[in-house]
Length: 382
Image (spheres, one colour):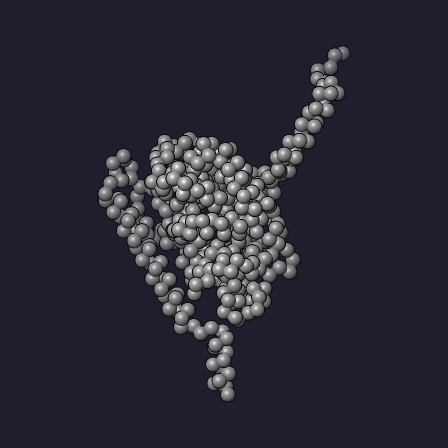
């Protein structure tokens, strides 16, 4: 009885085995399943997240780190690198913010968080960058990748080359948006390196990251950064989440001519991410004010139960401002009346944010520093 099995000559079998071994070496992540749960939080950690780092931008000094070299999927923090490369093209004169680009079918059908792009519509680079920062638009990221790199794979090569130049030794990108990909990883230290270089090269980029709400062709999206509108001086930068990473955040805040930059990776949920971001910034500013010797010591003075950030603030803000808004249904419906309404709503939102900032600044001036308050209390007691 004849067999239907195909037997390879020994030399062919050996060649195929060697080829598979080489592929496993050259392609990070080959042969490993994508984790479905976020990384563990280290026991007895100061912050209830897997990984974190805090940096003093004015003195180029790391103030605090926790498990900062743990490899974790970057999720949508990836978009910071994609925006960085697009702005490089603008600075060299190859592109301008007003450059318009047709949206490909590939970009329009990209899943996950979206700006709401449609195939064949034309959008400006300025709109795309805003969509990447506010909506965390995977569709916008693909359009930018195709524009800057010529193709998504070529753009990803540019991302990894830029990472090497910046010294991000613990990072490897596989796509321009951060959707789950086997073998895509970063570290809190590397994300700090990226954000630091990005802000130094393009400080005005914070205007994208500080935008609260975006409406594009009837699709309403809002910034998920929990610090915006709640933490005094916070004005960026980027959130991210996939199951394998947990909740990630790059964030920055300035106060009294001092600026902090921080990264959190692997928070178990969005509320914990928000609380620990508030605590980490508070600890840094306490050190600046002389109320604590180190950030680690300051964190012990800041109980988690004292923090109640509103993680749905920007969502409610968006829905309130755009209540009753209906998307245009015809080619000519989005005329002057619609544009006028959109600009008025944006002006209202901007005025509201500025009023909150002024109120927070006044409250901060009225609140005495802990050290000075203690001295006054001692004088009264005496």
